[in-house]
Amino acid sequence: MEPSELRRAMAAGRATASALGLQADDAVVVHDSDRVALRLVPCDVLARVAPSGHLADSEFEVEVAHRLADVDAPVAELDPRIQPRIHVRDAFAISLWTYYEPVGSEIAPADYADVLMRHHAALRQIDLDAPHFTDRVAAALKEVNDPERSPELPDSDRELLSTTLEGLSATISCDRTGDQLLHGEPHPGNLLNTRRGPLLVDLATCCRGPIEFDLAHAPEEVGEHYAGADHGLVQRCRALNWAMFSAWRWRRADQMPDRGHWRVEGLHRVRAALDRCARG
Image 1 (tube, helix red, strand yellow):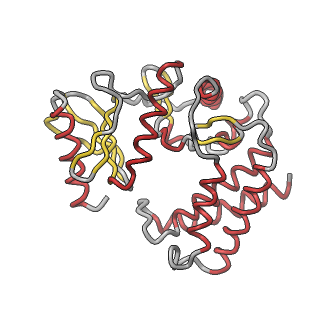
Image 2: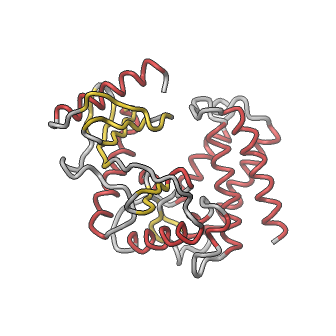
Image 3: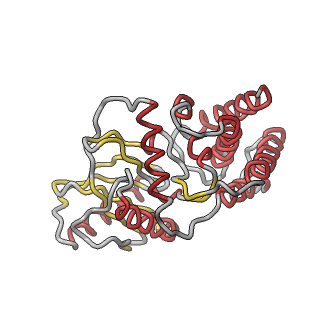
């Protein structure tokens, strides 16, 4: 967020918690991008504050978390002291979550795979209307195929991303018999190591697709510990995920920190993943 918007978001988060009877004397930024995560103290709440344009996504995330709380999923929970809902204040959508103090040790690949297997099992127990992963691919294609949305994307790279997104999406989705609800983006940044064990966060990316789509976001070693995974499909999903990641970085309005680096690195990762797919 821009500094002025961040200050407003912090004030909105604190005011929302205070209005609900939680003491929020200060706010510490935990994560800042197009939305911000704040640790409110001393009440120890994690406030996720998003511009009101993300209201639907925020409401969906709260619904996912509320459903998963009933099936013992390994996910971060909404703050139990208040009702599970979105609060709107000063053009921000605000949700309040339990704050988990991170534990420093690295999550081993086998433990990472175990979390994903347990999460996928929990997701199979709930009924939720969620988009298919191909809907996200279509959104990325819209950015890539419109030069006004991605004016700085070179023509050759535009063609690479467009071809990759369209081709792999069609290949991966041709057989949907194994599709189920997924986390959507269970990369290492969305897996916290806590005293309760590893917990997944950022549930707004929940979608439908093959479990390999989720595995492709995790370190490569994780897939080796996930029973029944199709490793060739994981590689194809990994290439597709990097193509989507690259598409977002070339958006005119993208706010990811160090965007210039990730524009170059993302395209490099796309080509490397495609090479691995070609080698089998």
